[in-house]
Amino acid sequence: MKKKILGILVLFATIFFSCKGTINTVRYSENSPKKFKRAFIISLENSEYIKFKFGNFTYAGYLPSKDDKAKKVEVIGNTDTIIKRELEKRGILAVIGKKGDEPENFDLIVKYKDKWRWDFKKILDELEISFISPKGNKVIAKSHFSIYKNKELHNFPTPEKEVPKMIKELIGK
Image (cartoon, rainbow, N blue to C red; front, side):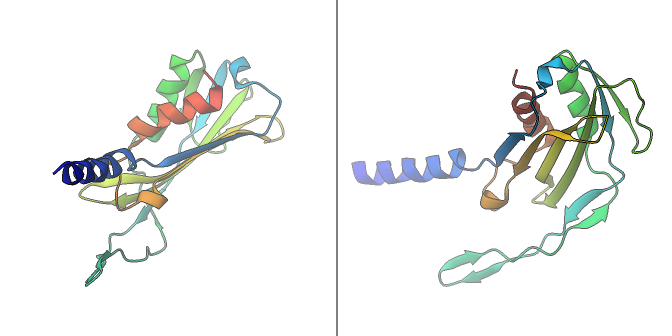
């Protein structure tokens, strides 16, 4: 009986605690993100979307299908607004604009790229946020979120859940 309960607990823990995506953050510059005061967020013109495909049921269990290539679609979600909110929580004034409209009085440009998939609703599959210097377009830091390793078992990721963690790692606060 104890072994059965232990087995159920291990299964429960595996499903609910290993279902998060991964975030990898890298800083490329000596410039400390803590020094930045004004950021310009370049809003996307398109998001990428992976269409849902059914897998196959076999004697061994369910085998998920291989993803088709992501397609460009109308922007999904409000990632730019969430990035702005998180930067401002950390004392960085942020403005959202379009590519090519970058003003000269900003000391940080923030670019992002998102990819979504459907699983009972649209969920965030991948998100990359880059901090770029306005002079020379040098990448200062980059953070990448992905559910790929756990795409079948996930916690329904959204920008509201993932952006705060990514910005925290990018800034270090």
